[in-house]
Length: 165
Image 1 (cartoon, rainbow, N blue to C red):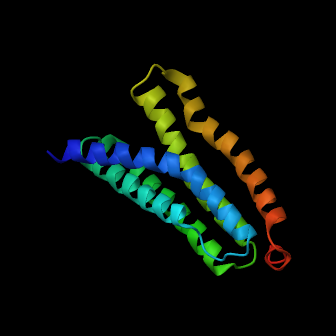
Image 2 (image 1 turned 90 degrees about the vertical axis):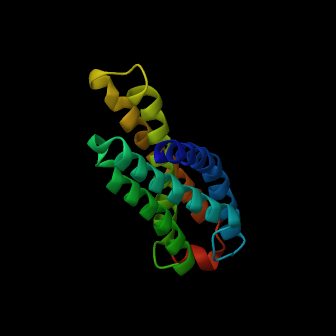
């Protein structure tokens, strides 16, 4: 009985997270460039969507797929990345852009990886060694994009904030 509800919540919040992620990152970049010290409303919604998708993933594993138990700590780490981004942006410690960008970007990579793996490996046509491609490609591509974004963010920051890098 709980499985259909968990699955609906998981799919809906996963879609919300995938849609909100890039919008939140763009909004925050603009806010930081104008000397704002906190993340925006879209980031708050992105954090909420990520929390719900991670909790529902854990529930789905417990309910139906105990063989995927290792996804529960992955879910916790994914949400931890979102919180790293929030805390880094608000506290502005030395190197805060690393924490913010890698936290926000890393959590988004996890969402993209989950979508691709479910579509191509779990419920899809890929089998054998080629299954590693959907697991690794989002990280390989996303890591480069994260670093490009971080450098652009630093360049866009007001001088006082940029010196705290």
